[in-house]
Length: 565
Image 1 (cartoon, rainbow, N blue to C red):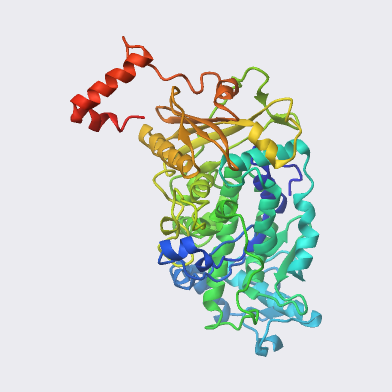
Image 2 (spheres, rainbow, N blue to C red):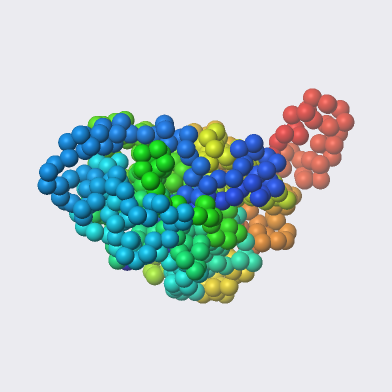
């Protein structure tokens, strides 16, 4: 596992994902508690908890989908193991057999009404679960895996340091980066918002640095072991042993989520197959309280971004499985993982990111923020943009560009990350700008005094226009007003996203510039917020008069003119 942090303007998400690699399975939220979800989408019902390595989302109630994803190769491997079990099986060479236990062995804990596992019973449960993962994944473990079951409170206490060890410059970077996505306003620290996702929803995680799995239990007195969570995290341990997960790191938020699309897609695919066999072919341990999770008061924008690998990853893995025999193409993908979330959202597209340049064209005391000697920049990617447009979907009092009805997928327990405002993504780069006054300010309020340039590239001019239309709607939802006398310039007067915004389209490129005021926009990026050009031959006053006369004299002209920007 690489110990160095990812250098990105939304460094917190990318860094936490890199630190935890496969962080912790997030439980699915009870979205029916949201008034927006309940009123806007028929599919906004209660989703079961899912286990996964970074953050998992509403993924669990996937029983119907599991049947679709079921592997013929895994089934045939299981049948072959049953029919021709070797007389002298070994952990290293026999699929479905680990340390004396077969995948279908009966254990004393199977007859319990709960999933409390005493210390002397834990190893057999782990070995059988390893054998079951091998049976589905058709590859053997190379080593044993340590497993610990802890309460959620213990998990929170031991993981707080993951969100505390950042410099002032890094915190400024994080705060501005998340504010740029309208995900965390300047009244909240980005680290605190991210901690809500991990602290309240993680059900388990595998740590490549220690080769250990930690299962988080909701019962602090007698922690219970969720076998599906265990199975998911065991897949990550298997990946690490066979493919070296430490190699799977992206240098940006988008790249990090993309490689997680492979790792989490693989683990989630196996988990769903595992779940399908529980109750029909296998006895499985399940917490007596059902799929309860911790406090789910999470930041939804961050959650939607982090959950994307779990949502789209299984379909991506299913696509790879169809490209070769069994798991061969999936195994090969660990040498060439997807480079963008677009490649995972649209399997088979193989979307490579376009190189986007944001040269420093600032002036009057403004400059690009540097952290550890590098310019603070990031690639948000298609998944991050969807999360930005959907961040308000769970808030019944706030309009959202992507509504809850559009966000929830056609299958129960899934999200739809394929939207017209974002599906033409080709590349982007978001660069933060600062001044001496706020260079080392870690308070989230300082983000309001910073600026940024976010340049995006699209597959067509129509795609870039659709993105900007969505962004204008996002600004409008947060109270933005057009600025008289300046082209495509908007101001939000108050609130957590107050400031000035300039939007520019140039063919397939779309650029967003943000500054504390309209006057500062051109200091952050030369040429931003240009004055509106008057009609040739008229002064501004004369132009207003001419337009008034034209409006009175021509209904047809008015019908066209009112749609101008």
